[in-house]
Length: 164
Image 1 (cartoon, rainbow, N blue to C red):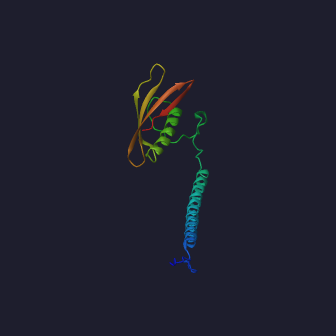
Image 2 (cartoon, rainbow, N blue to C red):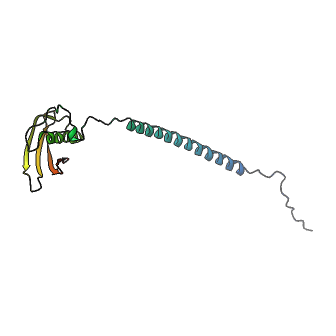
């Protein structure tokens, strides 16, 4: 009789480390996610603080209030105003203040009346509108030209300074 070999599993089967490896990999991935979240939170909070400081600085910005907006309420002493052109003293003063503001925004740091010239480039038309070219002394010896349009309207002369 032939005997068939019996197949019986060995009592000591090798144990699988697969579950342990999967658990370690998941733990490492979770730790990496926590670190990335922490770093992103830190830098996000730093950006928030800087934005908050910028907003606070903007809110603390003082707007100058010494500029007269109503030509009827000009100070008694107008100071130095360039001479020339067709406008009266009050309108010339309004134009000069406008030129100073536009000049400071366009690189003419401290426009001064001394050395500033006014040339009429267009005589009044049928509506009374005329154009003058003001060449301002920027305070450092550099001149800058501004085209100023005067438009009479309802008894007041409006002044418009073109940004160079």
